[in-house]
Length: 178
Image (tube, rainbow, N blue to C red):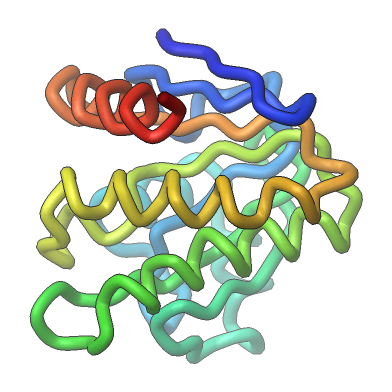
């Protein structure tokens, strides 16, 4: 696990499961446009949260790449789920701006709802094919830009599925903070 504190906000990178973050107020779902149960992160979150999550999501869909919406956590240990639709690499253009909007808009929603801690997966890097190195770079650069605007968010955690993804995120964060 890596921890860095910048302007009073702690950024963490851990390997783990996004639905097993009981000390985090909001987790981020790498959602599909219809906000339905899917594979990967969306499937894990919906299964853990129960059918009430999909019901709450129904009137909020569809969303476009880069957009985010917020719901309750239902059966999760987290109070909120922020659903982001990441870009499909090579399809939704410009990918880097759309991916940056996911992180930016999720943090803005967290700020509006006075959320103190948020956990992100590596958005768009699974089925949507975004190269993990590029995605980590976009994520951390975007977070660094928005940090001065955050008053309520005090902890941002990246929950990465594989050890390789964790290593890439740790290296990218270290390099950007030099």
